[in-house]
Image (cartoon, rainbow, N blue to C red):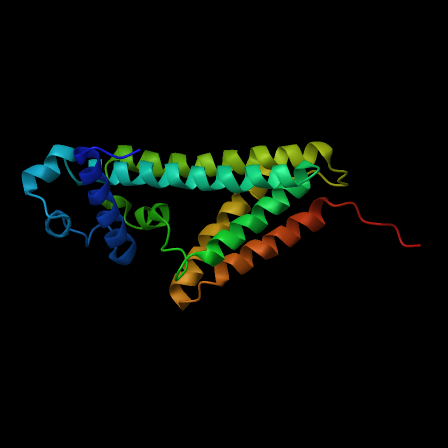
Amino acid sequence: MMMGRGAATRERILAITETAVLAKGFGATSIEEVIAEAGITKSGFFYHFRDKNELARALLQRYMERDDALLDDVFARGRELATDPLHGFLVGLKLLAETMADLPGGHPGCLVATYCYQERLFDRGVRELYQNIVLHWRARFRLLLSEVVAQADVDEPVDLDSLADMVSTVIEGGLVLGRATGDPEILPNQLMLLRDYIRRLFEPVEAAP
């Protein structure tokens, strides 16, 4: 379905801004440079976004929607390909690692991380939004892991919130390390190590003969 002209302009503004923010931060990205690259007037920009905080919120919402769509897809496919929640989760992690490995030049980075380190630039609404996104990630992974635990035979209780946060931490940390080193393989490799850890945590240990 084709976007209308107004929606297409808004999407172009968001795409240009996201690229700039991931490259140099929100504070160093000016409305003027976005306007120039988008080929619009200042009044055209303010038709779509009242100020930079509204632009920041829109960027985060767009980022969360794309993130949700990707995670929904890989973990749904994982569950379709597996016989139980544990192996569905493991397949989902593998598919996510493969998706990250297939991105040309690696993943460009995380807007949430970028915002956290420049929090003084944003109003309360923006800060609450990126905090809610992090809690949303926790809830998403906790739900998947709770299904694993329900069918797993584990000797010790598992702190599902901490384990869910660990999934997010590996993803975020892999993005940062990949960016710092210029190595796009770091994130996929970290995801596969996480996959192996979770498999060992929940798969029953076979008794020695």
